[in-house]
Amino acid sequence: MVDKDKVLHGVQMLLDGLGVDLQNKHFQNTPERAANAWVDEICSGLGEKKFSLTTFPAGENYEPSMVVLQHIPVKSVCAHHLLPFIGEATVAYIPDELLCGISKLSRIVDYFSRRPQVQEELTSDIANFLCENLAPQGAGVIIKATHLCMAMRGVGHDGVMTTSSLKGSFLRESNVRAEFMALAHTESLNKL
Image (tube, rainbow, N blue to C red; front, side, top):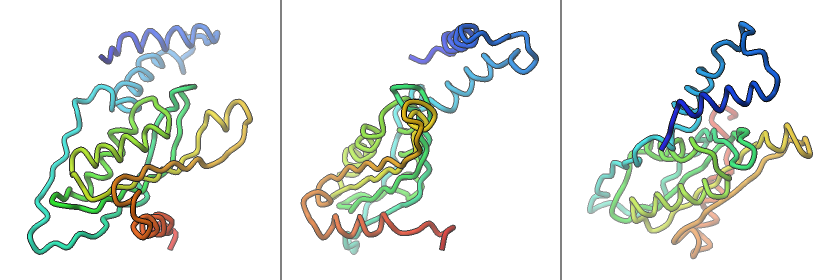
């Protein structure tokens, strides 16, 4: 259970431990602001009730084809150092009997992103959620992200980590996998 008072106290202890003067005008309200940011925004996926996916019947004339949403913002926090990782996700599925609104794919990514975790599990959690809630013929998720835990500490290098999770036909059928990979590597409309 999320406890904002404990988060606030933890931020106060962190700043005090770093020797920051909490009476300095720039830091006077930092523990409260930071606690609000961590609880209400950065880790809101921990406090929210289970995400509910609205679905629709595919319709009797629907011929299954791949549904893909690209360039979904990913903003999460590394479980190992509590530093951000930021990037983009591509989420796809081949409906069987159920469809979901396209914006829901973005909401799923946002819901699962807002908590401390490792990118590998985030990728898998999104694909598993799609399979559990839509029972599609297959699903695929690719996340590409830059990790500040690597850029700001340790080796101190930038880099882009790519993870994927393939389920059903995306895993079993090479032509489906190839189509997904080709679509996942197209440029953003902003870059065209």
